[in-house]
Amino acid sequence: MAVLDEGAGSTARLPARDAGRLGLTLGAFLVAAMVALPLIAVATLALRSSGGAFAHLAETVLAGYIFNTAGLLLGVGLGVVLIGVGTAWLVTMCRFPGSRLFEWALLLPLAMPTYVIAIVYVEMLEYAGPLQGMLRELAGWQTPRDYWFPEIRSLPGAMIVLSLVLYPYVFLLSRAAFLDQSVCALEVSRTLGRGPWRGFLTTALPLARPAIAVGLALALMEVLNDFGAVRQFAVTTFTTGIYDVWLGMHNAPAAAQLACLLLVFVLAVLALERHSRRQRRYHQTSRRYRTLPGYRLTGLRALAAQTACAAPLILGFVLPALVLAGWTLESVALARVEDYVSDIVTTLALAAGAAALAVAVGLYLAYAMRIAGAGRGLSLAVRLASTGYAVPGSIIAVGVLMPFAWADHVLNDVGEAVFGITFGLVLSGTVVAVGFAYLVRFLALSFGTIEASLGRVTQNMDGASRTLGRGLGGTLVSVHLPLIRGGVLTAALLVFVDVMKELPATLILRPFNFSTLATRIYEYASDERFEECGLWALTIVVVGILPVILLSHAIRASRPGGGLPKGGG
Image (tube, rainbow, N blue to C red; front, side, top):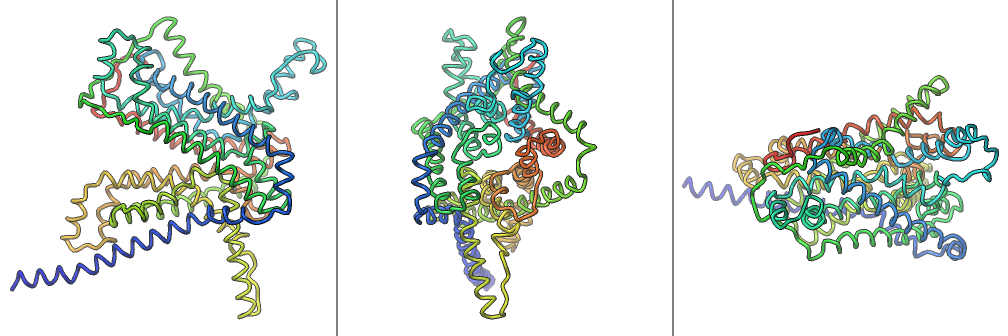
């Protein structure tokens, strides 16, 4: 009888578990559809007539958008690969004075927003800047015709400066890939007569190619999303064009059509990244994860390695940070304390709210895929919803405004018909639109991090929890969350810092009289009040250093067995 009762109880509970699994699945589809809505809205809006505006753009500025965007992608792509891969190999496989310091310090430019470093270099190197002013005073030059100096407000200037701040994406993943390589492959290379550098080119570099491709794709996505930096360099790209057409010409269909063209570049970058790894799978054939060889460099070779690592660090972080600190000291007495306090409170509140929302949604989607199984339909929906990080903020902003404006229109019609009142722009004209855009943009960060953490928890834990009578929600709270809290905190931190730096979406969607640290920096820079933005910019940089330190520790601990090169540094 006891056996029959137990079986009956199990049968009775089975529909409840199935219902919970079905509810998770349907909820995941609904969430994924909502997050993907802005992209669908952009495509729909682009089908409308722009009243000849797009034809005018095609005749006048479109060629420039294409040339500058493609040029930036090519120049920055080459720069970040050369700097990122080269320095990653040096600090991973070579021992020289300072190598341990460079392991984490080379990640510091990640804390420097692109528009901030652009402001610093434009102010320093333009004709009216301190460097050219000092040269004219020393040499007695009077006019620009008396000497030649490279123009910083140019496409090459943008390429170089963006490379200095974006190379850590490639460095980060390249170093992780080099640390993960088996020592056997390197030993075989040496037995075949290849020295350290030939071994790097013929063995280590091909093995790390998938990771390098991902890092390159991330850097190029940041290039496509950039607005503030290219504006400072006077380089017109699709992102600046979308902003100008939307807010300057007030032509939403034309802006959407430009956004769709920019999506072509996004898809091209993603396709290039996938093609570079197509039919190329590199697997370790050994479990020997002993200490990596560690080539010791001395003399001129050590000096060359130090210079190669120090140059991007100094130019991409140390020098701009010192300039910002100087500006802050000079202008702190002129800074409006109430503006600074208001901006930092607003920014922190937005970042914290967006991080909490992105983590909650990312956790829900990752858990739904774990429980319901990664079926093709659910997997496709979730992957589509988490592609926002590959879409520039300006496109997301356009896509958010359209459905939100429609919802406001419906809400006001209903309010007027039923209550005789209108509610105003409760969605499209408030911080709700900004927060939703952040969710769409940064969901990929939280989902990817949490999904990876959940993947390391064995399914046996779910079964054990169910035998103790816990349902799906109870299992998540009492079993999974304690095990993946590190991944959840990492996801929240990454989203928090990225929201603090986000500019294009915030500029387009923010309500009137609404400022964040990023938008205030842009306003000061637009008015040529560079020194006054120092305090705001330095605040973002200081906050951004924390995840950089955590990432460095995570990378160093990532090699199985902890086998890092010994000695030196």
